[in-house]
Image 1 (tube, rainbow, N blue to C red):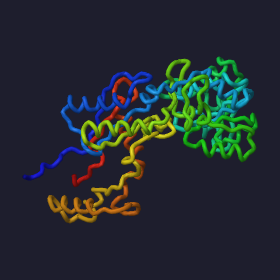
Image 2: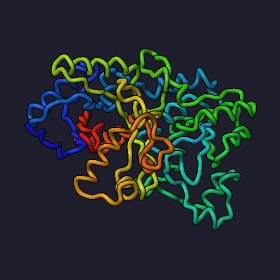
Image 3: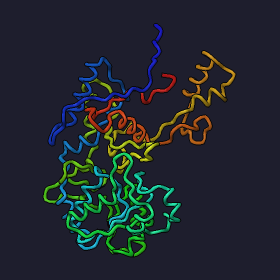
Length: 399
């Protein structure tokens, strides 16, 4: 009997789940939701399908929350409660404002140093036209708030209309701390103001800490060093601290989930026990993609995936079909071309790094690529699909 050729490649489905509350058995809920969706929609699970669970519901099930007061206590204990330099935060009401409330409440004075023309993930504080017109060099110049206003004026974020300079200033003062705002891109510039520094960058934090320590700072911590242990029974994250946190209420933050590996392995086991199929499972946060209009890099989490099963380790190892069609097999067509390309794919061995037929493929971690697909599938609003089920991701032209 002739095998029917599959006509569909990768399929990504958002899976609806109940609203998750603290203490829920998330492994059971995720497994049941996927199996019920398969029955409802008429699809079957296969080996190497992928189940992805958003970090938000993992943290919620864990009850991984902290309050402004918890953050303030930890900051005061670790940084002394005097003048604290808070450098390179991202501009976000969801991601950083609650953190800043707690930091300010744990200090007498905050010297807030903002990177410019944009923050680490691309939120703009200025545009290059005004910077150039003012003769400012962002790589060396340290601007006072007065100089910034004189040269740039008010520069609200395009999509939200928020002037974060004023917003953060008011927020710090509301928490009872003095505030001074400067603009600079060299971490060491803060040491002219204070030697106790909390560096709030995400992906460049290791370098910022190194530069500050080498320059003689008395205390240097990152957001990943705050809330690494419970404060008065709060949640915590021993590896990432406040990194990856989100606003929950006006006084509470949801931390990045902790210890997720047992969860992904338990879901994998439950699905195998129910279906006999070995699926891969991961927890995902922000996808690692950039918006071309707003210039915002969508990665405010410290990693895309804090936990995943073994089959998701590594990077893709793919050949570029159009390269083979246009070069190696340019004289073939129809079934002969299909056969030649299929044989090339079956014959590929080992790493394809440096192979011209692999140029243009994406040498990113599988979990980063899949995380972006999941983030775009689930959205960040009201779709109600915190689990994403992916089929065919590891297929190629020969399947």
